[in-house]
Amino acid sequence: MTGTGLAEREIGISWSRLREHMECPQHAHLKDQGKKAPVTDIRVFFPGTVVDRCMRRWLEQEVPQPGQMAAWCAEIMETEERAARETKDGIVKWRSREDKAEVLANCIECLTRLEPILSRLVLPYDYEPAARFRVPLLIPYLDGSQQRIWLVGEMDLLTGCDTRHGRMHEVWDLKMTADNGYWRKTTGQLLFYDLAVLLMAGRYPVRCGLIQPMCAQQELAFTFTGEQRRELLMHISRYCAAVWRRDFPLRPTTDRCGFCDTKHACPRYAGDGGGGRVPWPVLGA
Image (cartoon, rainbow, N blue to C red; front, side, top):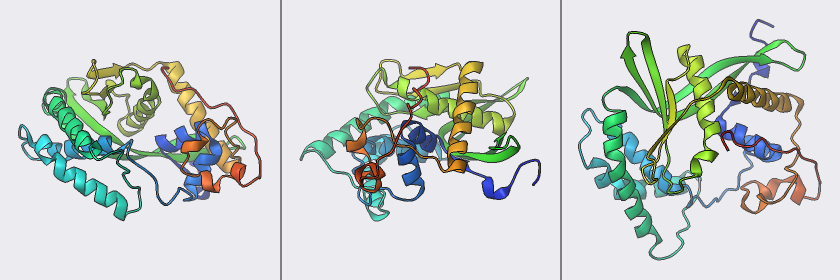
């Protein structure tokens, strides 16, 4: 054993897995085991995926041109739908004959609104779209010794601007939603990115925020408190302890079971029963 613990105890933890664990530890465990349903309807998330891919492609151009994102939208929608089906990531179950055309129109409107926002918030600075990270974090193991784990994930946009104080960072997450209150469900994710930037760069980002072109407030930035950051570390530690103990109780209620993509493998529906714990409320709610 070293100052970073044992290699076999190392865990990779993403925000999505942490959130799933807080909502239902058994669900997160089944996802880890690859028990996700082989055919999942991804219609709800698909427009956001399309808009994100258009933005990524635009920002990867040497000189992004006006109108490119909207012009690419139909092509990228077809590509993403086909890729999801071929990789078994899911299928898009269109809700009506008009649904696909309506989604395309909404995506184009979102991208049209997005372009001037990116031109102001992102293009003047160094930036990295789809910024992937894998950063180490030391937390207590079950016996109190220090153990290394890894925070992993991908940020939609990581920007950096050079100032006399050194390189400063901003994190922006793109959301294609028209719900002005949707941000309440996202603050935990941004807090996770806030910690990841600290571990990557040695300081917290200047801003973590949402770009939500279809909402009344198109840019929404957050300032996190020390208490919120400590709460995140506590939940990361609880997740790791559950994995090390192999303790994966069921969610105490069944209100979300109808939409669960691991329901077919869940002990609750195999007659095995199980307990549960109250999930952590989303930060900022």
